[in-house]
Image 1 (cartoon, rainbow, N blue to C red):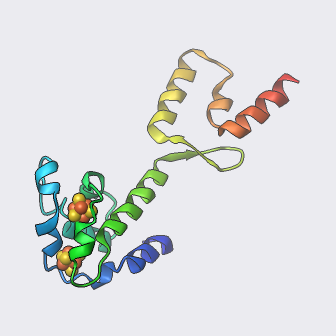
Image 2: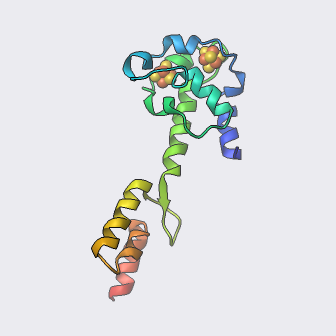
Length: 144
Ligand code: SF4
Ligand code: SF4
């Protein structure tokens, strides 16, 4: 578990969870999310986060209504925790610019682009690995 991950758990009060289930009773995901289960529930997300699990389906299905955070008697900001975990997951799916390290494209889009380049745009692969600013600089450098 990384330092950043631990900081998020502490800041959102996840360690205070007493597994009472009050957040589950208030959560609309039971109606809005097909296949709602204990794992997808806000309590489930908190418990999985405390175990350092990577795959948390409740994180994607959450509506961010904040009912869970307002209801929790232990002061866990479940909605805030879920928002933070979403950001972490989104960041993990980004590719980084091979020149300056800036976030570039979601990994799936990056793979698609790489496939398209490999299929017929020989010589362009270097641009596909750069963020827009570095791509522009490389283009100017290569064409001036
Ligand atoms: S309401 Fe709070 S203490 Fe109860 S299960 Fe949900 S997060 Fe844990
Ligand atoms: S913020 Fe998300 S997890 Fe919390 S009650 Fe609303 S939908 Fe459920």
